[in-house]
Length: 242
Ligand code: 6GU
Image (cartoon, rainbow, N blue to C red):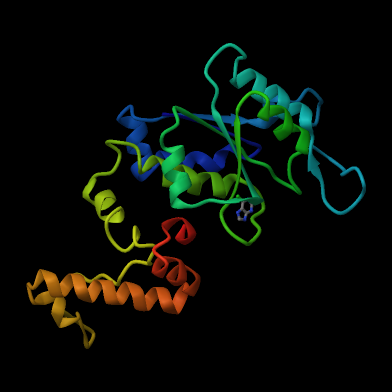
């Protein structure tokens, strides 16, 4: 897979050299391109924003630098990337979307700042590529960079050969997560710590009882924290649970 990230703060993406994503790059499973949007400005101040038509607070990202950046990075006669535009007004990003994006050969992130990118940039890009406006959740970040990092990590860990222990992925697709539930609590040694004991069933060696206990816990935690997911899970409707 290739991933290109366009931003006025390319330094945000230094974190991708670390851990799992860094290893995927070192291992040749992932190619990363990091681009400064201001490289496609032409004025002395390298201006990327302007005031919004129709009035209102804040600034809007000008279309011209984005248009030039996409023209430069996506030649008309070659393969087309999936263009991901992180925005709080996007479709909610979920695990099934991560799995879908992990099938793509080429992802490109357009990270906006301020009040967003002139809407014509996405409208024009749609004529040439698959555009996905995605949100991490119902809260506001200052820009798309942190969301692009989160989406990149969620996608890259699904690429074949990236995860140290692929059993974790198998478990994710058979356990509580597939059922649309939150995960059960986990424990490791020591069996007793600061007066708190690991639930004895986990030390019992009875695999059936362990599985039953974990299913109960997953249900309890989901009921407490995400009653919306529990309803969907009980309908056995995986899509609603997503
Ligand atoms: Cl994807 N972008 C921004 N700027 N804020 C967000 C978000 C994305 N998801 C949640 N809040």
